[in-house]
Structure formats: C-alpha cells, structure tokens
Image 1 (cartoon, helix red, strand yellow):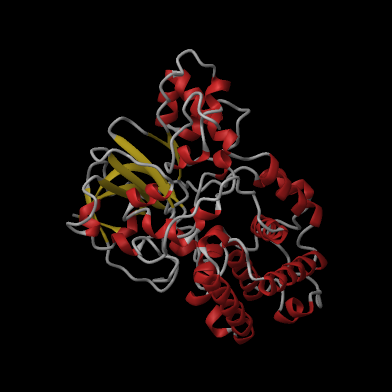
Image 2 (cartoon, rainbow over the protein chains, first blue to last red):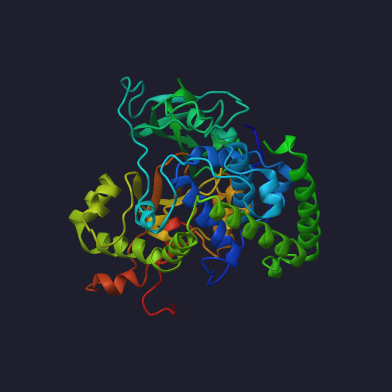
Length: 219
Length: 232
C-alpha cells in the first residue's frame, strides 16, 4: 500500500538525532510490547509480514506521531482482535472474558524462548528457475497494490542492475495477506542515484533494494 | 483494519494530538521527553493487553521477562564487533564472510546465531556502505542488538537513500567526495552488516583489542571505527 511507512526520499523530517549511550529500552512498557510481539508471533498468531502490514495500516497521522514501540503496540492489539485472539471488550476491560483461541504452536512459555533467539528461515525450494541473471538490467514495475508490498515507491518505474541472487524466499505480498508463502526469487537490484533523484542527485550514490521477481520486468 | 474501528480512532486521535502538541513544544534536545498523560495511557493499555494475553493462556509472563533479558544482556554490537575484528585479522575468514556471511559466522559458534540471510558488505578506499530500512526497521539484530531510535525514525528512513552525505553530516561524519556511497535498503529478510576498514596504526593488535575499536555505527555505515588512542 502507498502508506506513510514508505518513506524513502521524502523531505521535511529534519535531522537525524543520534542519542549518546542510548538504553536498549526507554520505558519499561516498550520492552513488554517487544516481548509480546515476539511471543505471539512465535506462538503462531501471525507471521512477520502480517505484523508489518498492520503497522502500515495505522492511520497516517497516528503513524507519524507515534513512537516506534507505540506503533508496534497499536498494530499488535488491532491484529490480535481482528484475528479473533481477543475482543475489544476484553482489551477495554483489561481482563479475559472468554476462553482463548487455539494457537498454532501452543502457549508461549519459558521453554519456547531459546528457539526465537535464532532468526527464522525464509528461504524455500524454488518452484521455477530464476528469470534473471547477475548483471541483467531490470525495471521495477510501476505497481500500486493497496495491500502489503516490499517494493518501495521511490524505485518504481526505474531501471537497475541485478547484483545478487539470494535464492527463493517467502513472498511478503501474499504471506502478509495470509494467501500463502508463494516463494519467489529474491535479488539485490542496484540503482544509480541520479536515475532515482534526477540530475541534481549525488553522482556518487548507488542505492539497492532487495526485490522479489514479481516486482521486476526485463529492461 | 484501523480506519474502520471507531473505538480505536477515538483513542488514537487523542494520542495523536497530545503527541503532536508535545512535539511542537519541545526543542530538539528534548525529543525523548514524552507527554506524560500520553505515556501513562500507553502504559495502562500495554499492561491491560498483557493481562488479557496471560489470562487467555497465550503467554507466560516469565517467558516475556526472559525475552527482554536476552535483548538487554545477550545480544548487542559486541557480537558484530567480534566478527569484524576476526575479519581484520584472518584473511580466509574475511573472504568466507564476504561470500556467505551466515555460513562464516556460523563457524564461529560462540558469537551469535544469525539465521540464514546475513550479507556482509565491505568498505573499501573507493566505496562506503550504509544500511537502512526505508519501509520499517529491518536491522541485523543478532549482530548489533535492537536498533537505536534514530534508525527506526522518519528522518533516517526518509533521507538515507536520497541524501546519505547529509545524513552522515548529522553524525559528524564526512566521506571524501570521490568515494561511491552505496546504500542498502533492507526491503526483504536479508540483513546487511557493514565491514568497516581497519584503522591505521593497529598492526599487530589482537582480535580482542581490535574489537574494542568497532562501533555499532561503523557496522551500519553511519560512522567509522575508533582510532587507536582516541577516547572511546
């Protein structure tokens, strides 16, 4: 979806402000939100792409004015309600009012913690040969799905060069919408800075994205 | 979804106005002073959600504690720093690391379990690499820990792909004008770690000594390693 989360190339957000000796969490509730998201994801309530999509659908004015973990919280609560794991009444009351729904991987207890400290695997067997080779020129498609996609707006319609092939991976566009993993070839595609930003762009800049094969046409 | 949920919008709009007014009334030095009424409301909502998840039998609070403890104590830039220091001292490891980051780090065993999709990109005298996630906050957690606030915030996400030299200036970092700047936008489950150049004056240093010079930002590409003798 063409949401405010797709920020590459936008102006007006001001300077980057590094924080010396930044703590891991600024408030205790942030750590609880992180842990709940990891736990409920690991228990099978949602996949990582679905959780990203819910954060993207936070209304733009709220998205832009909420802290990072606030967005995680808003996305998590809405997602769990819509997936039927809890109700708005329960959230408002702060207590369970009916039995829980079965989780694909069961309750998230202490015994589960070790397994989530290793990143998940996203590579899948290839259903077909790769269409593109290293060095091929490709054009990012001019597509504007209203659902989840990982093709940022700032490269759409532009021509780049395939630099790396990462194998076949879970396709976020379908996984997020719970329409299956639908594995697709994944490439690093490099764009020239001035192709993206015009003649005034930095002549020494090259930008790459990791692009799934359905995002690309031969050029 | 959110726009159709009126209860949610009522709360969110109030938060939004508070946060906006708070933001407008703060100068840049105080951007972490959150509006207190908003904060307490958020805290209450987070606690309510955890209570519901616990009562419904979905999560064990002790397991949440253990997750938090792991992120606070076990994972952090020290993991990435050890990998970088080894690459600086062991040419065969460096070559393996650049060919397949996950596999090479896997052979170290004790460092961190990075999963399958880590790509290590090397800074050279002619190229400086920088990593961003314009769409969300993708970051090599296992190597660097949880990302800092600035990495996840709008200024960095919006500007890194268009004006990386301006972003570097915000960090007090300058890269010579004839050097290529390569920005890696982390748009999939691949994760990128920058291998910075080894600082001069470190000949004969041990891996442990070198690891002390490797900063988090030098592995994101928004900084350089410390210089020998400079205050850390």
